[in-house]
Image (cartoon, rainbow, N blue to C red; front, side, top):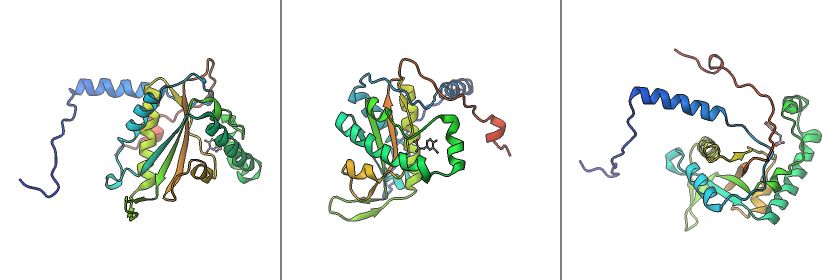
Length: 222
Ligand code: IYR
């Protein structure tokens, strides 16, 4: 069979039903232990680890396989300080008027405010950019599809990889975050999507006492 766009053979894992049940349960417990963490250690994390995490994220599916993402890995202390200053400026304005009373009340249990020390303490900041469109080497613009869905999936892969590596992360969304495009010198087609500090957890870590929804609240069987 000749095809214009040939397929290659794929060898998926083939598990017994027992293995499938066991592994799905183990992974459920493993992921249930993941928590968003705001208290980082400044213990270094090798760039090689960060590359592994990012390339795991980059293995996510994407619309028409456009892989419409760029991950900026920031380890330079001066750049982290610059990002912290700019983020805190925006966050100060948000917490003092831009966010609604309802929003502030919803955030109260999380104990967040405009101070963002983790942006300097965490050894790495991964800034995920989404590509609104692609630019070919000759400058021609090319469309990307389902960009938010694709980049959201990549971020999900990234968070699970971080958890699997014994590291912690925070999905931080300073808003608005156009300053990241400027500070990091990214091109016009790249828009900041998520800022993810990554590192080892601090000696003592406190997290809010949140409850996850039960199966009956999130699953509808038909
Ligand atoms: N971006 C702000 C506010 C914030 C918003 C949501 I929605 C959160 O779940 C947590 C925080 C901040 O990072 O503090």
